[in-house]
Image (cartoon, rainbow, N blue to C red; front, top):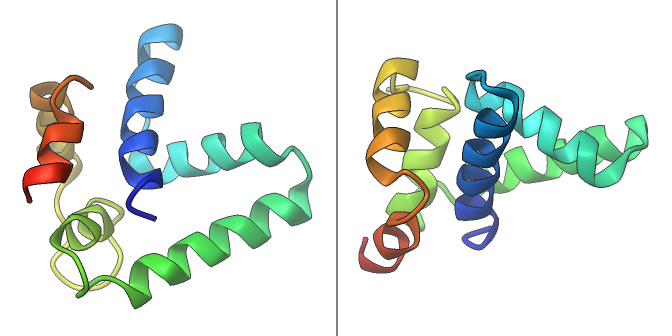
Length: 102
């Protein structure tokens, strides 16, 4: 999971740059899994597994907790504006450093 989270951030940045539009993280999660798996039942199954894993491991690592809050899962969600600011700051370049140092 810790490998997939920065991948999702990076792919989201690439997607937004390519299509010149902003999408919410939860919307992008569906886009990402749709592009990866193609079949509706496989897409739904993998999204469900991923979200369950995020919930299960939320306290195991602060990076998972932050990602969970960006997805607005559970209590204390982080606003989309803050997430967008976070993505601008990261700009896809320092995100891996953030994941190493947190």
